[in-house]
Length: 150
Image (cartoon, rainbow, N blue to C red):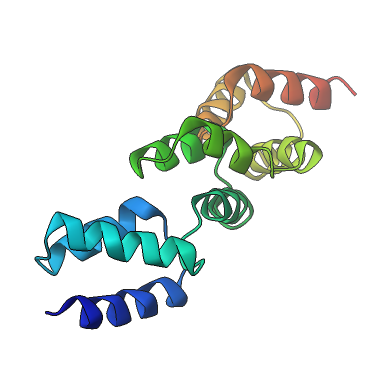
């Protein structure tokens, strides 16, 4: 594949869905191009705004939170796997509204505990489920205790 063909193909790949530099680099490596050619294509994509890692972090964070109900810890881990720098991950996570975040914890808790009276085991199991979604354990405990003692 020529560099021009690869550029055209990867532009379509980026236009279809927002991608980070790591994802695009991995895809370009599949085309068996030289590392210099890959870097030139990446530079061109960044210049033309096909790749923007900050934008990617923001969109990824909001999307995973709103659609999949992921917590910050799970989102952060997924972004780290995409080799994104810590400061961009922080910018992305900052897009999540704190009140929506706490409300989601409570919504997940109420979805897992449908009864009016909740046993200790049910409460613990629900909290473990919420933690497995990537929410911080101390925040889970604070939100649930506040809701139960109203």
